[in-house]
Length: 239
Image: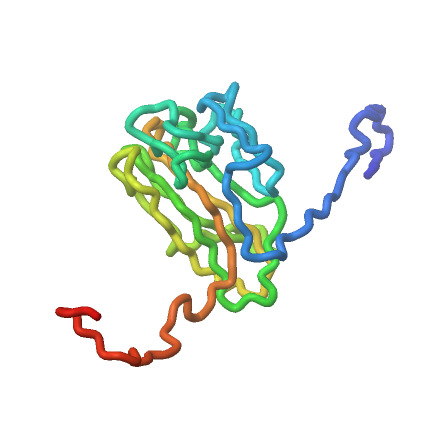
């Protein structure tokens, strides 16, 4: 793009660019599963010099993991700060993603966001589920946000929001959260996780693992038939 003002002798500001427009293929295959193990995912040590390595997954951390801000990093086993964070991943042997509480002030948010979109066309009851670990006195909240195609406004899915610490020890079990996306069935959307901490507190290592997006069936479990056994069974004198 080029522009010029009459009698302007400064030509270095006449143009902008180059501008690159990239099309990122939306996610169309379900169930879609993302954990933080496998090729490309490498845990760090909780510092900006080594926040871990993110695989090419279509998701990114914002702020960047090495920004010296409250941001998501790749972890394994304990986080660097005591009295916050999980002892291990959901499987107790792999990686997880967590927001490092040693950075950031003024009640910041760490985001883990999609680069591309999710195509929910053909779905009737889409959901996103994940596991979380929220141990730390300075934890504010964790929630899922969505923006539909054609909009620039992120909306927090209120039922997804978890407030304050949810575990009381690093060795506590991870908990499961399922979030209904039915309001966006048939649409193309983007998703992101938003982790928040209180003021500049460091005890705010919020962790997530095992992200799953799928079309939930109307009945996960049901009774199809009840039949009587062909022979009488005596529990006091089994045959």
